[in-house]
View 1 (cartoon, rainbow, N blue to C red):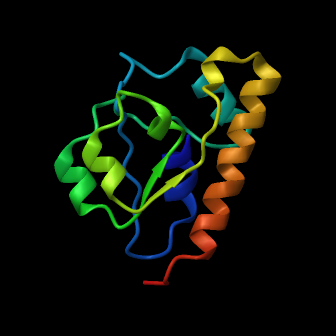
View 2 (view 1 turned 90 degrees about the vertical axis):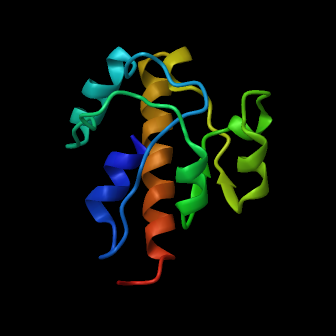
View 3 (view 1 turned 90 degrees about the horizontal axis):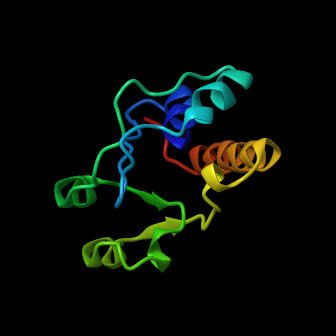
Length: 118
């Protein structure tokens, strides 16, 4: 969700990439409809594993709470990271899912406002 929100409003020269430390086989079934409710589309690629190359090339790393997990790569802990520590929406009812979605959207907008322009 964060990738869709970010890339829709990113300043020139900025693009989001999305990967996980323990990626699922596919997006949660509700993600597509929850994004569609607010006018966004699910990115076309399936979830994928975060690589060291991506970590090394990122200007900003945002995590959704993995820094508390044993699965978080040690290298990621060494980088400047914004950890939003959000609950996994897949474990929540629809209202909870929407609340996480809206929090992500709000935080992405705040992040973009603080980025240097092109």
